[in-house]
Structures are given as structure tokens and as C-alpha cells.
Length: 389
Image (tube, rainbow, N blue to C red; front, side, top):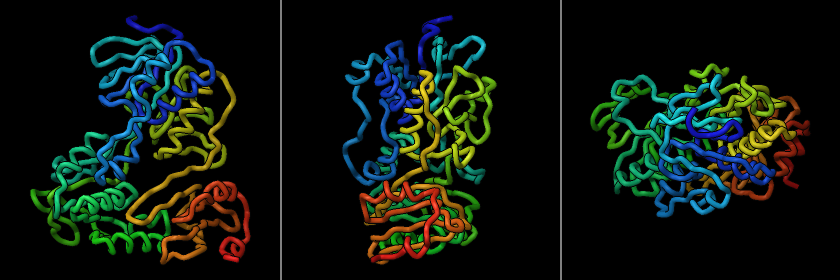
């Protein structure tokens, strides 16, 4: 069988969901063996810093906890280690050195990997998922370096802002009519695009990439010079391990509202989990806040304690002077209502479907997100939502 015992808790993946699960397991009284397996050599860290502060020039790279903390919590950390197989019948995982770890309960927090579309020359492009990715990109950007980002989503735009802060020239290629159009709607999408344009970012919309060649990106709009090409067109959940083991997978590892997989001993949390939300149904969310909360819920579920996936999705972004928080889950057809000064980057946006508030966003106005969270899912008078009195 190898190392490990049937009562062990093994966690695969060393991101925020994993750390949150460890914290909760110990807080809730679990005193048994706890093993964390992560493929990156670093201790767990917060990924938002990769496209924000750290990439923009911050010298300090922050881990969530230092080595002493894991020792204090009696956690065995296997960093720089890959799990090559999961055997549900045997109740074990196999590591890249051939050793096996037995488990009584297993948490899959394997995250997601950047998508790489089938474009000629894509192998020469870079992606941003790990701290090593961020280090290499930051070291490569100098004054005037042209960084062309394929994809105008949150990561692509955050990278553009950070590249600009480093003195580089940022170019964003977006297939839609506006960056973030499906997320924010046309008015707010234009606001974000204008923000970037004012700071010197080149944005090419309704543009598809045909090939990546040395020094240039060939697109439907012509050739665009590029020193570095970064692909940011989304991420795919890392489900191979689960699928090969026979667990149910879809756009993520399928779990119920308590984050239990099709095997009662195995749980999933974070970017990889396609979880049954009590309101929204099957939902996979790739954000920091969700990973932390799902880690807590998975830990409680492992211990047989109550809980359910019932919180609203949340995320935040910082781009130039634009800082915002968003809570809820809107759809492109929802109506967008604005309250405040959109020109001055201090306003609140609401999304409504009929009279039901589906999402809220605060820009440059703080200490209101909890109130927005309470509004989401309730009915409200549109006139009251936008009333400044």
C-alpha cells in the first residue's frame, strides 16, 4: 500500500481552497494526519497578486502562511510533487516518485489551467497562472516592450494595466465588440475600455488571431507587432485526475451542495469544482473568495458537519485608478442600472432581471459590498436603486 493510513486526510492542490480547508479542519477539531500535495515548489499563495501588484512591480511575493505555520498545524507539505494517479478502489494516490499515499478522505483542489486555442505559433506565447509565469513576464518587460494579450477579460486587462505600470506597451486583442461585454454590458464595458485607452493601452475589438509569428501577431485586422504574446482566453478545470479515476466530471469535477463527489470519500473545491449552488444550480467559479469559502465548506463536509454552497459569487479587480468589487451572477440580457458618478470612477451598478437584483458592483465606493450582497436575489424598485437622495 505504501505510506499513509486509512484515516488520513489528503489534499491535492496547494491553492487557497486547500489552505482554507486546512485551517478549518484544525479549527473544527480534526487532529489526525493531514497531507498537502502541490505541484508548484512554492508554499500556497494568493493568485490575484500575479496579475496585479506582483506583476506590476511589487518586490515582495506573499505566501498565505510560512513553513512554521504548517509545522505548527502538523501538516505534511509535499511541494513540487505531482499526483499521477488516483485509485478509488485502493483508496490511494500515486505520486510522481512512485510512492503511494492512502487516504480516508480526499480533497481535490487541483485548480484550472490556462486555455491555449489551436492557433499556429501558440507554443511561442506565454500564459499567466503561476508565480514563475509572473516572474518571467515581469523580468521580460522593459521600457517600450510590446506585450500583446490575446483576450480582453479580467486577467487580460489586469495584465495590460500591470505591463503599463512597468513601462511596457500593452495591446489587447478581443474577439467581441467590447472587452467584458458579456459580463458588464455595453455601458460599463465601454467605461473600462476608455479607462485603458486613456492610459495608452491599445485595444483591438472584433479581432481574431490567425497566427503568432516572430515579432508579429497576424489577425483579422492585420499584423500587430509584438515582443511578447500572452494568451488569456480563460482557464479549463484540471479534471484529468478525477476523470481517469472514474469520478463524474463535466465543466469541472461534479459535486453536490456540500462539495461531495460521486465517491463519498472524495470532495472537490475551488476552480476545479462544478458545484450545485442552492440558487444558481451547477456553478463553477474561478475567484479567490469562492476558493476560500469552498475550502471551508469542504472541510466541514469531510467532518460530517452542516453547510451548503449558498453564497453569492464575488470578485474584485484593480486596474489603474479603477478598483471595484462585484457580487452576484448576472446575464447579458439583464438591465444595468447606474448610481453615482461614472466619469469620476465612483459609482454603483446594479443588474436586474425584471425587478430581481441579480448582481451589484461598487466602484471606488467602499463598505457597501455587504449591502449589495444582501440585495442580490431580492426584488427592488429600480428608481430607488438609482436614487442619490
